Image (cartoon, rainbow, N blue to C red; front, side, top):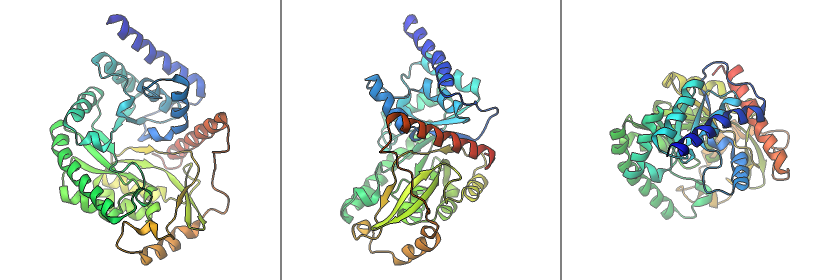
Length: 357
């Protein structure tokens, strides 16, 4: 057992040097409220999995923390599954790393885990040892207008969400954890507020994503204002849009390159929760299609919302990008990784230097 633990400690310490050498990026000179969410590295994670031939995490915690630091972040929003172990000695090493780097840590967990007593016990034990108090979760892993093809199925999903949260809230209370539900291309802001009001529990709130509700034809600043009283954590991102024949294309772009009201949203959320963390979610990928002009898009609502369409087109789509949105599918693996690194690096620099986060 002693040899096994010392090997883990060696992996933790050596990975710090490896990451710093690989990126040649300056580490954060002082604590900051800007972290990086795990989905900012889908390309790196996928390539790591392919290279490692392992069923474990592509970027384990002992590599992910120094990776985030190398980009100038002051913390991480990390998938719980990125912990290689929940043994005490392993967690002590991770806690020591966080404290030495003065970095915060949040867990991202699935909604299935959130409502499972055994899973939440495991999460809570690790959270306590690592100083984690906030969780990010999402009720839907996909997109409302893509995953549901009839109102009945959507209503069934809504009912299941309600049941999951009814199980989750007592578990969060018991373990003294706070969970933020992401607006994950599923709920309109008013629908999510109604859900949170139904529970009215300080242990259950929102992970406010700066861009997702554009896909539901909502203005990001209005969404932030509605969800601000419930904010637990965030996904800060900037978005660009461009029309196509069935609707519009939606892309994450480096902070400052898009049309999202970044200053206004961060101010609203900070006023509501001064200690909120801004976790970058800069997903480097091809543009997503939002086919709001089709009948299918509106299947999970009672009718096509003409007023919402007109407002979105006037206030958001009118600011569409004049140039093509970034496409990475035609790039080599090396070029994709370089693009991802550059997007994250530029975004963290903008958050710290321009937004003063």
